[in-house]
Image (cartoon, rainbow, N blue to C red; front, side, top):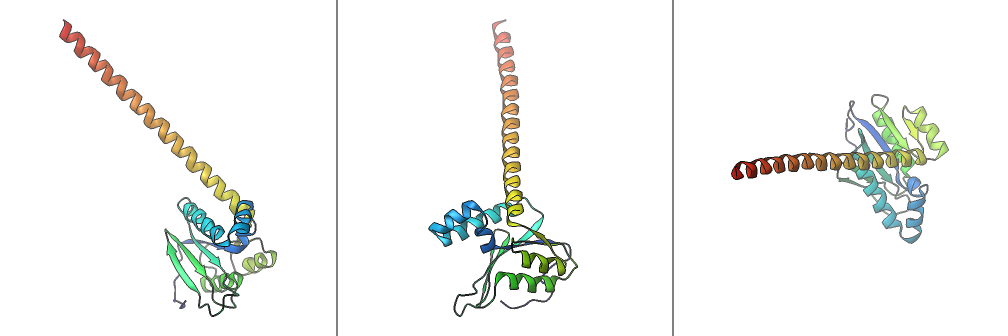
Length: 181
C-alpha cells in the first residue's frame, strides 16, 4: 500500500480495530475461529460494517499478515469501512502505530485492542484506547438501540395505520348512513 499524504482528515473521528485481537477476545468469534478463521474474519467484518452505520467514527479494521509470505499488504473499502491486511513481517500493532504517527494529534483516534503494551503506545501517540470488551459492549448497545428504534417505528406505523383504518371506517359508516336516509 502506498503512503498517501494527508489521507486522514482533521474533522473525522477514526476507530482502528485490531482484528485478530478482537477475534481472540469475543466469545462468539473465538468459537467461530475454532471452526474457521475465515468465517470469524468475515463475521467481524460484517459486525464492524453494521456498527459503522451507528457510529460517527470511520472504522479501519486491521488484520496482520505478519506470517504470510510475500504479502505486500492489501486495502479493501467495503460498505463504509476500510479493511487492511498488513504486509509480510508487519503486525497490526505496527501498522496502527505508524498510522497514529501519520495522523498525529490533529484528530480523534481510538484504537480497539486488549494488548496492554499496545494500549500504552496508543496513549503516548495521542490516541485513546478501547478494550475488546468495551468495543463489544458498544456494538451490543448499538444493536439494541437499532432494535428499539425499529420496534418503535413499527409500532408507530401500526398505530398510524390503525388511525387511518378507523377514519376510513367512520367515513364508510357515514356514507352508508347517508345512502340509507
